Length: 239
Image (cartoon, rainbow, N blue to C red; front, side, top):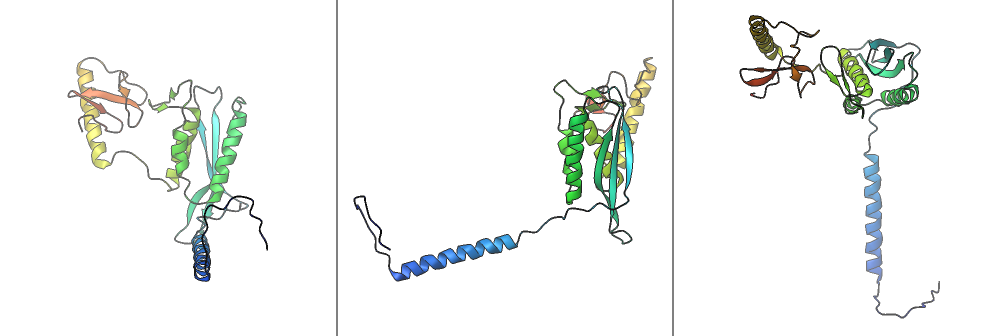
């Protein structure tokens, strides 16, 4: 095929048959490498199909940002039923309430979460993602003095609790030795309070003047022996 050159020729090179064959072989090798890489891709999990019967739990949460309580239902599918590897994993989530103010985004959130559940694979990342959502108007304290940054984070608390109950997440908290030390510190502090004539505590048994702990986000941090110590998780600025 003839090609008409309309611009001035400033330089040229001559391609021989050996160079052309080498270039062709190089292209073929690149194509084979790409195909081999594509063949190594492993599907982490196939989407789960819904069985006729599911088991699950319903959790009730009452927050100061909603007039009515929220009822969160998480249904699980039983995997490898009847075998030593039998376990439960979340399949779908529903949230119901008389309050219609948050209806649209709650429906959207639960549908997306249910889709992630059905996809399979690791779903524990959802807990951290939900916990990291902050309300621009500010969060609130739930019973026990724990700070919740948003209603979405409260839903994340429920998901975390459910995953712990079915064994997908380990329960976080102090070990037996730390718990014993915390109880000793708490008893010591309450004894000092009683001697000073101050015995007022909140519903969780923590002093009313306790500060917010940066680790467990609970109003349970008090000054003991000149050091800020949390009576809930044991976190201490002095180690």
